[in-house]
Length: 332
Image (cartoon, rainbow, N blue to C red):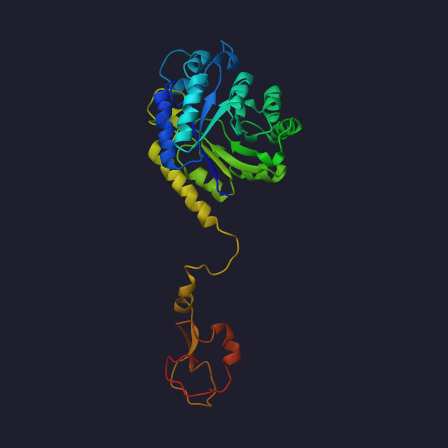
C-alpha cells in the first residue's frame, strides 16, 4: 500500500480560479495523490463577531480582524467546484475538499467525492460527524487539539452513523501554523494507531519536510501538507505552506522511504549478493603447509575472498591434518 499524499491547497487560491488551477498543476507535477481545497459558506462557518486566529492576524497585513470577512473572500462557489473537479480529472489527480458545514457536506456528496476529510476543528461537532458518517464513504479524520477521549468519541459517532472502521484513517495533527518542532509529538501518531486499531497518518503544519518523511518511516499511510505558489502571498496559510520545489522534494523523499522500508525480512538483498564473496573472508594458509601437517594458529590465517571455508568453522579446522600441500594465501 503506498502512502496517500494529499497536497493541501486549502484557501491558498485566494479566491481565484486561475490560482486554484495553478495549484493543481503544481500538485500534479509533484506527483501527489490528491489536491485538497476547502468548501464552506462563511455565513454557516463563523459568526460575524468571530475574530481571526493570532497566526492569521500575523500572516495578513490588513487591519480587518474579522474571520467572516476573510473567509467570505475565500469561498468557492458550486460552478468553481465543477470546474476544478473537471480540471483535476483532465490532469488525472484526485480532487478533495474539506466541508465545514452541512450544506457543504451535501454539495461534496452530490459532486461524487469518495473521500471526506474532517478537519481538526470539527472533531467535537456531533451533528457534523454524524452527517459525514451517514454517507458511508472513506473518511480522513484530523485530530489537532484533540485528546484520546475526543478521538474515541468522534470515531464512535462516525462508525455508529454507518461508516466502516476500515474506511477511516486518523491523522495526528497540531493546528498551530507553523507547528514548533517540540510540539509535533509524532509518537502520538503511533499511540492513535495502536489504541484504536485504525489506519493512521499525519497532517503537518511544521516548516520544512523532515517530519513528514519521519512520519512515513514510522508507518503513516497518509500525509497531508499545505502548499502554495509563493510563501510571500497575502493570505492566512501561505507562510506555513511548502513552495512548489519543496512539495516535489517531499514527495520524492516519501516515495524513496516507502521503497526503503521494504519487507521486514532480513536476508541478503539482490543488489548485495554478489558482494558476499568479495567482502567476507575464508580460512587460508599463512605459510606453505605440507600434506599431513597439523593446521594450527601459526600456519593459518583469515583473509578475503569469502568463497572458501568460513572462519566460523575455525575451531573445527584447528588441530586437523592438512589434506594436501598448500602454498601461502591458498584457500584451505
